[in-house]
Amino acid sequence: MERSLILLKPDCVQRRLIGKIISRFEEKAINIIAMKLIQVTPELAKQHYHEHVEKPFYPGLESFITGAPVVAMVLEGLDVIHVVREMLGATSGLKASPGTIRGDFSSSRQMNLVHASDGADAAAREIGLYFNENEVCSYQPTLTPWLKADDE
Image (cartoon, rainbow, N blue to C red; front, side, top):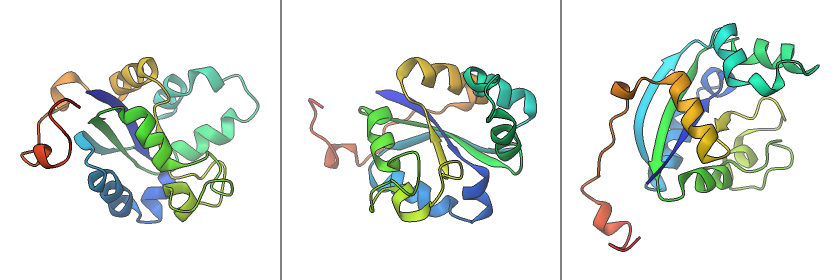
């Protein structure tokens, strides 16, 4: 099983889309194994977006991500990083295909509702920024045999 950090960004929280987005992940049979509502601090933003801190757009990014609470989640599932990124669609909501989360709910590059880890190393690093190991509750849903074959 693979894990990914997901942030329902301030625009998602403010627009009251939390339930709609979470239901998409649940309907895809992806396990939510950790979740909390938090206020991202400037310090946490700098750690999360460390590769962008020196870029000219960073002050606006920090202002956005610290502007309202986010819902931080750890998702777990088969190939979950790729699956979630496909579900989100292109970074810009204007370029995201209909049927994707961003294609259905976003019309902005920055206010694109959801952050998702882009690889296994990033997922491990990002999960460690937002969650302690004792906050992650991996489990096997009882309906798993009806969602995938034993050899998957």
